[in-house]
Length: 200
Image (tube, one colour):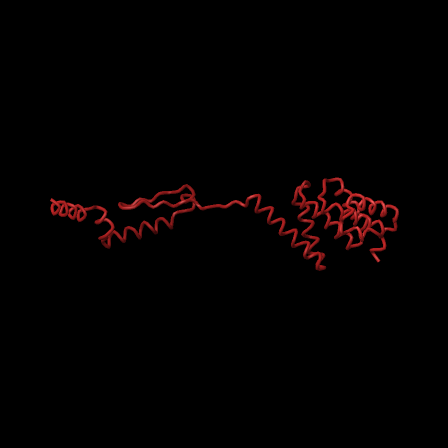
């Protein structure tokens, strides 16, 4: 009985269409597949976008649409952060022209509620100070103070406003900004600089 079953199994395997199809290809089959492959490559993008199918007696070839990865919000924020860091680095190393151009672009790109926007505006004011445009810088910082600022940025704005007033010879207003800095941020590392004499 076992011998009979073995012979039957061997006969089924030998006659299998799968074995014939894939194990003993003739040259004409290979030529057909080459032609199909060439047709697949020569078709236009519109058929690829819809997922076109190409048929052979043995196989169905499907061309899938291209994969598009959108630039997500998280990636965009990371990119803007890197751009701001790059501009600050350039500014601190004296490359003011390139840095100030980057701050200007960021200021136009970002939303006003964004903390990165506030940083870009602060450094745009710093750019004006570098060019001795104190009044314009002071106006820009005044507009910035109307927004909700982080505890990292607000003391810097107050200190810089005081310094601008010192440079303009208005020590009374400068003292008001310095006193506000001392009252609101007494532990800030900027406190020792809250004086017109720190500019000498």
